Structures are given as structure tokens and as C-alpha cells.
Image 1 (cartoon, helix red, strand yellow):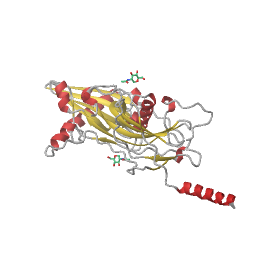
Image 2 (cartoon, helix red, strand yellow):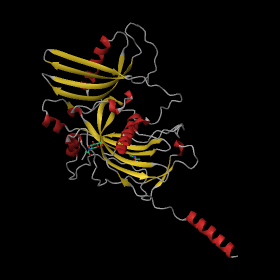
Image 3 (tube, helix red, strand yellow):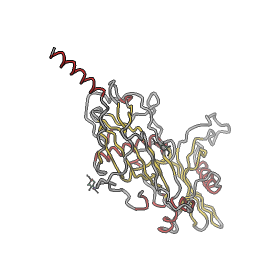
Image 4 (cartoon, helix red, strand yellow):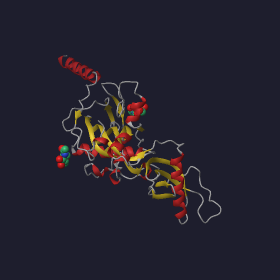
Length: 374
Ligand SMILES: *[C@@H]1O[C@H](CO)[C@@H](O)[C@H](O)[C@H]1NC(C)=O
Ligand SMILES: *[C@@H]1O[C@H](CO)[C@@H](O)[C@H](O)[C@H]1NC(C)=O
């Protein structure tokens, strides 16, 4: 009888334990922004952000602004990263790695901040970026002119700007004229700046696609009208009272090796040390693309003058990344990354506010205040 009762009590206790409310989430750990694993994870997160973009330029990591780690019981960690980034000269369609791209000169700089949530599970060899968001702004014209009164200044991108369009079409005509056979047509202008030399000078960057007409042919081969951009050209058009100068160079994208099935591999795993195992990575399957976007905002000075009525300054780099707003967290299902039935059930917490970690922000590659978000 005594034995039976204690058995019943035991069962009840087990049952109650199982139904007791979930444990509060383990606290987020603030991480040093110069820690080697934080830097490696940040580099991978940015690589995935670039890979996911269809438009704009590859972003490079200038510094880690803030970092938190949220360890998950036997499921690795979620990292919450705030990254200060710089635009490079490579278009995202080139699929170049950010480390292989050069940042722009200061008068062309576009800089900003990304927030990213990154999952890493070293023993299971899983790396995955579920979500990100970035905000970018050009360096203000006022600061450019203050530092360098003769430098070219960015021209606001406006499709109806005929001067910009003229610079693009004239320079592309020059390229086509010098091209032995293949001809290219303009997809869109992606960047423009202007400068007064002895007359107005316009500098443009634009995407091109192959034109169905080659030089020697009188007829044009049929080609889908929605063909992809194949390269990025830089051109300039300078007018002086008695002469016009045109320059052009084009950079063609390397053809991408399409993995059968259309999906390229997930993250390049070389920059994070994963254990060497005979087992294949746990995630051979299809992975949904991360969700996120890169938002382009105007020059901060422009925004302030437009908003001069309101006394409050605009937020310099507003970036939201809210997978949840529940302070107790919410389930994040990443089971598609794993094979086991109970794997990949994570908890995500609201994106934490800035840590007061004494090693954050980390050291910057480009330390000029001009390109560092506050
Ligand atoms: C990312 O930013 C966009 C635009 O600001 C916003 O609508 C979206 O909710 C953000 N994503 C997340 C996960 O917070
Ligand atoms: C960052 O880490 C590197 C390598 O560990 C070290 O050489 C460098 O001094 C650190 N920089 C700062 C500002 O702590």
C-alpha cells in the first residue's frame, strides 16, 4: 500500500512537472564585439544578407556594433548582431564575397546598420540566418563639400534625370561601338554623381544586359525580353564649351554555377571552425531564404531640412527586427535544418537593446566618423 501510494505520488509529480509552465528563457549573454567567434558569425551573416539581395551593392562589415548570444538547450545558439556596414563597388548580382569587394571612396560612401539573427549549432554543423534588416544612407553632401569642395557629389536617383540618363546611354554607346560583336543595352542606372570641371561632368553606374542584336547581324536573334543583367558599367560624360568626353568600363558577372534544383548551398562554412565529422551536415535539404530587406534612406541633412518644423531629429539608422515582441519569447521552428524529429525547435526573444559591453562597438576598419553610425 505504502509502495503503491508513493508510486502514485511519483507519477503525479512527474505529470505535474511535465505540465508546469515552461522555464523562463536563459538570459541573453552580451558578447564582446571583437571576439573571434562573434566576428566570424558576423561575417557569415553579412555574406548571407548579400546573397539574399537582388538589388543594390554588396555590403562589407566595417565593425560589429553590438552582439548578444542566446544559448539554446542542446540546440546551439542564436546570435543577435548589430553590424555597421559600408557599401562596396560590387553589385550583389556579381555574387562576389564582401571580402573581395572594395569600399567606395568617401565622397561616394553609403553606410549604415544591419540587424541580424543568426543560428549556429557547431556540433550539428548548422549555420543559418533566419532574418535580417538593414538601413543605409549616403554620406551627407554637406560633409563631402566641407572636406573636399571639388569632389563629385551624389545625384539623387531620379529616373527622370535626363543628364544622368544621357551619361549612361552615351557611355554605353561608346562601349558598344568598341565591342567587336556583342552589344549591350541599359537595364538601369544604379548610381550617379556630378562634378563641375570646366563644364558639368556626370558619373554613372548602370546594369546592362545582352542585346539580342550583334554588330554584324542585320537581324536580331530572339531573346527573352526579361533577360538578366550580365554586368555593371561605369561611365562618365563631361562637357566643356568645345568638347565632350566620354569614358566607360564594364565588369561582367561570373556565370553562377547552378546547383541542380536551383538552390545554391547555404553558408560557406570555412570561416567558422566546425568539428570535423564523418557525418554530413545535418541540413542537406531545401532551406527557405532568410526574410529581410535593405532600406535606402536619404542623406541625413536632407531629411532634417524637410522635417525642420518638427524639433525632433530623425533617427539616424532605424532598423527593426522583431521576430517576436513577447518578452518570454516565442518558438522558432528551424526543424527543416535538421533530420532528427525533436531538433530545430528554438526559442527566439525580442531583439535586445544595446548592451553596455565594454568591448562594443568593436574596432572599425574605416574609423572616420563620417561613415560610422552613432
Ligand atoms: C524589417 O523592416 C521592414 C521595413 O522597415 C519591416 O516592415 C519588417 O517588419 C522588418 N522585419 C522584421 C522581422 O522586423
Ligand atoms: C581585436 O582582436 C585582435 C585579435 O584578437 C587584437 O589583435 C586586437 O588588438 C583587438 N582590438 C581591440 C580594439 O580590442
